[in-house]
Length: 281
Image (cartoon, one colour):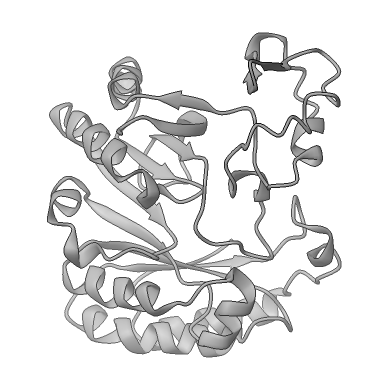
């Protein structure tokens, strides 16, 4: 099945890879991060109907046991997202890749590339491959924004049409990673090494969460893995993201935002290891 649940599409973005890009955000993720800033993208709708009664405009209805969404009458209050017990959204469009390619044709005069994100984009492999094939025919640059819980080394067809991966490395310590995401990080670390060796690692991203995660350990160990590639001229960037308690679950809303002294110290670790470009956001 190549159709995929698309949570939203940003026609023009300058923060999801180099240049102006169209970004597809898929619904569904195989991680359950405690600090997720978009927790409504994690699950898939089970048609339980919890969202129907709270919708003030009738944009969400139950029809023949299936939750239906009418975008044209939605007021954007997000009451449905708050009511969902599965961290899901009823405001999802199931889209065929050819529909995505047609959108890219419309945006082509104004964009340099396309990025797929999530949720988790590797869960929608068939859609991504066909979308990227269409993008390549238009001369567009292709990027994936992934949590890395995927064996990229076993998927040559995907890598053939993907110019690079922006990889989230949330935590190198296995126990802390399991506590944060509910999953192991073996594949993430394998992806880090493999993609760097294959010349397909565009950027590494780490969210810095004070007190709850061993942030310095993660940055140091990521840099240990990437330092040999940087010395050989690889232009792999490292984006260090300050945790912000916006849109997160209740138990993370009281977590402090890391100060710039902390971020500067982590940035210095990466620069000293030879990272050619560190971005603190």
